[in-house]
Amino acid sequence: MRRGIGLLAAAVATVWATAAFAEYPDRVITYIVPYAPGGGADVGVRIAEPFLEKCLGGEIVVIDKPGAGGVLGMIDIAAAAPDGYTLGSLLTPNLPVGTIANDPPRYTMDSFDYLSNLVGSRVAISARKGGKFKTIQDLLDAAKAAPVQAAITQAGADDHLVLLRLMEASGAQFEFIPMVESPLARNAVMGGHVDILGLSVTESANFKDQLETLVVAGAERFSGLPDVPTLKELGYDITGGNTFLMGAPNGLPADVKDKLDKCFQEVGKNPDYRKAIEERNFIFTPMTAAETEAFAMGEYTALKRIWDSKPWK
Image (cartoon, rainbow, N blue to C red):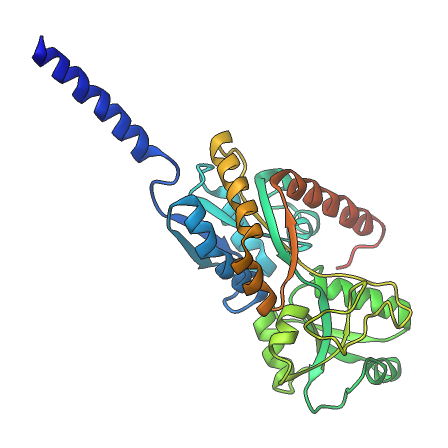
């Protein structure tokens, strides 16, 4: 009898141990950033990484997979197993642009589960420090007389869309030079090879000794660049920038998605995390999983309307 009780107890202990071991996560989580190291998307994730690891109780490895304006990395996210062990960045407007402008698209808006948003940014138009453009008016005057070279990441990205709208509103002329990734565009302008670029305010503020930021595409001035005017101040009702959505392949188990949602929210409430993103000049734009999905679908609808009336390619 005692032997039977002992075997039963051992079996129960084994079941409990197996359940505890299988609790998510029980192995390393891969987080895919579809952009180059050192850009806003990469830096933003790496700031959140240790806080998220602490909440989840597991290790996260961040992998940068740049290419085609984020499309290559987002293909990998969409194609991964929906088990919670592959997460990734789904930036807007790049995510909806990839589904709208590519024929056929390699993924759709329904290819992903949307988990959170913590930070975002706004486009800042910048030139080389000490170069020929000191103010936005200098740039517009020159661009009305002759085309000015503008480095962009890709057609349909946030920087390109802002500059297109500024051309239409002001009569300026820009010659767009796709550079694929923001660090390449930034280096081209700092090296004097290209005249201007549209860069996130996060990166512009972090490189203000090398870049002359002329204007910000926001509704209000950015705290990291308090002396730089907005396009709205100058009479152009133009805003634009990236929102750094976080997601996973569609079909996550409900308990895994719930845990990730709660942990992302916990990270957003952490004062040490808030201090870290403020120091790196990010804009805090928290969203729950439900809010993130609604925002992503709203961006798709708005951009599809623009594409259907006037394709940006």
